[in-house]
Amino acid sequence: MDRGDILSGSAFTAVLRSAVVFLLVLVSVGWAALTYVETNLLTQYRADVKERWDILAADHEAEGPDHVVDTIRHVRTLHDSGARALAIFDGGGYLAGNIRTRPPGDGFQIGPLDHESAPPPGNAGEFVYYAGELGGRWLVVGQRLDMLHRTRAAFVQTLALTGFIVVLSMLSLGYFLSWQSLVRLREIEATLERASEGDVSARIPDTGGTTQIDRLAREMNRHLDRSSRLMTTTRNTAAAVAHDLKSPLGRAFLALGRAQDKLEAGADPRDALLDAESDLEQMRGIFATYLQLSRIEANTDSATFGAVGLGALVRDLAETCALVAEDAGQRLTAHLDDADDYEMRGDPQMLQQLVLNLVQNAINHGPQGNEICLELARRGPDIELVVADRGPGIPEEAREAVFQPFHRLDPSRTKPGTGLGLALVRAIVERHGGTIALHDHAPGLRVEIGFPAST
Image (cartoon, rainbow, N blue to C red; front, side, top):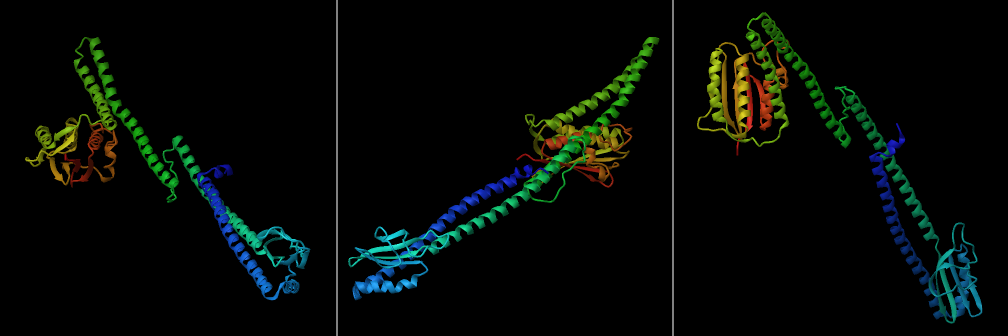
């Protein structure tokens, strides 16, 4: 796995940017905190230095200048470490103390002093000192800034170590997350490559994660499922179309051959031509139904939609289809409230086609004495249309498959039919924003359709 791919991953890049921001914040906050600490330490240094200067000034007032000089000479031995500075000068120069040269300026100052003790290694020998005139002489009291320098060094080291550990941890975590993301992306890439080569079973492994890539993988799997179903349906449809067209096309070819033979023999070819016409009409009906199904599924324009009284439509079709059912030795009845129009928004021609397909299916597959029932009722905000019969019904495991175009329960495809009736019914239902479900009628089939009623 290329390390460059991991370092260019979004997780590592995001963590790297966060690390840069963290370092900037750390430096800014650290600088502000260090400035605050140094300011407080210098204030304490100045207070301590000024307090000692004031003590010597009070001693000068009480005991006289020579006593101050003697005090400095005796106290000098206490400052052998060189951390404190104490000296007094007169017009002629040095009188006493551990500073050999009078420093410039008066009041509080920060800088090096000509101290008789050398500063420790790594120390610049800076002092904070107070210099002022005292009875014609010049008194200097100071304190070396050892604590300030140690505090500054410790503070900087702590910040640097903290920054290094945190940034290293962040980058390590970012590298790990980027590696995980890259592994998932490689899995997605491999799966899509397999799918593009025709493997309809290719799916992205589902780790059960909740990351964006995991959610994307599950969504892509749903699309792959749908593509797989479409490809399977397309293959089955192509095979079914070829099979369903083969028979009428062969019969039409034979009928035209018979007609030609009759013409050559001087006989009347009309019977053969009528047979060919019947077979060609069957083929035309298959194509027309499939084109109608495709147009309904592809068209989202509702320009042909309007207010439809479903009650009147069902009553009219029930009267017409009852005669067809009677000719087949079956009985069709309708149950609906005559006072209710069952008004909905839709295309009347599509809705008529829907009812006719369901009733015709019930008649075609029903036995002698079959009872077909058309029902309309209100179920909350919806209108429910039910078509129930006492025929052979549809096995539960096949109830979803029968909605696929050209799917037929007869594998040999010897019984009449195209396998497009229920596919067209579901397309019309979905076009009207409805739902359809198949249930066992014990015996028979019960088709329940729900349409949103007009508000």
